Image 1 (cartoon, rainbow, N blue to C red):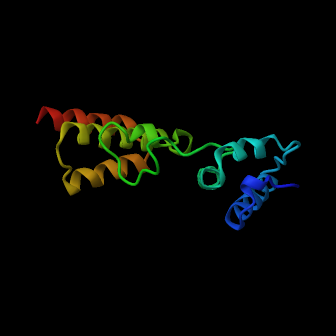
Image 2: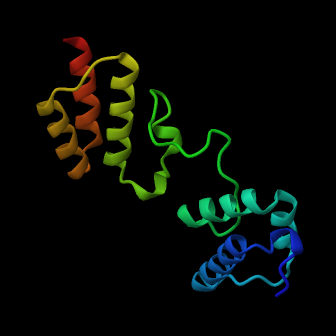
Length: 139
């Protein structure tokens, strides 16, 4: 495989080989070099970021990092948007919804309340979590 001159740096070459190893591992080898032209248009720095982002998220294809960059903290209203739902049970999703709503309300969670939410999520009891939120708003 010929790496384009624009991407022929040691760091970029290493990232490309890591990406090819990932594609081989998931049994999705490339049949053309079209993906290299896509990376070449980005330049070496952005191409490395795109490969790193795609590997980190275990994507099958190459996706550049989100415009907001790498998120380390979440603001109210953003928790559910950045979670990959298929990894979570319904109880976990409702727990994230609960935490998001509490953050939007601007209130803090007591340790006992958080312990109950975690227990309900582990038991996959989304209805109990929703009732807990409704009860906490009525108080």
